Image (tube, rainbow over all chains, first blue to last red; front, side, top):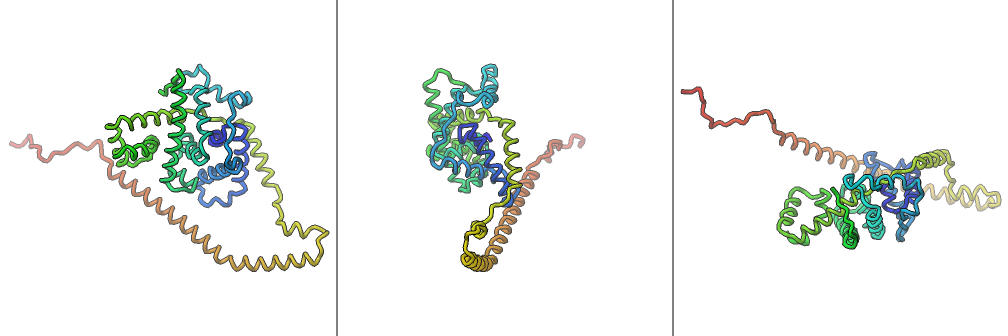
Length: 166
Length: 169
């Protein structure tokens, strides 16, 4: 669910895609040969659903203001000032900058970025999900990380507020 | 190590995806190169920001919706093939239906001819999966054996053969 949210930038879209993914997984369960690879298999279905839905166009990032109150409850709880920097909470603005940087990535970079940096999957798992070679995945992950880094660096360079990760 | 090779490996270093030897080489270069070190630090900082992005918690209503859809998918009548649907229509002339049946029979015969190949392919894939699984187990066992070999007994006292016997005159 979090993977789909970071891929689309919208809770509504992520929930819709999650529903499609589970239903498709249920109907195609007989094609899963190795139960140990269920996670990779499910990610692949989710990834195909994202690809089918957007087909080359970039998803529209839902701004914090557009989301409904219910959708925001968890994010707001996490991003509220009383948590303080000691709880490693990002400012909403920086979170938006990162989400926007992810959204602007070409799809193949966006996918490997979310799988590696957010979902914390190993490069081997990502290669298996995407059915690509390990060196190609490693190279794309680095390029994606550099692209997001450049956007974040630009933001941190123009703002006085520089949140620190403790 | 050259700067280009080093910077290409920085993300893998942060993600813990380098071998011990590669990591030593990259860290060695970072110790001497301030430019690559800065590159590493900014990438590390960005990764840390991304890692602490709040995780979206699904709404409780989401799973209920999925369950409903799954239940209806389970009870849904499988869609009939196009040919069958066409045959059920009353307006299709009997002669056309007969022609289609003949075509289906011909198609079935062709499918039967292809079956041995498909069976062989499936068997090949299953055997390959099995071999991969066994290979992974062997690798995993090798790691365990190596760990056992590396394991040192913390209670064993260091023995020095050169130590003189204090009770010997």
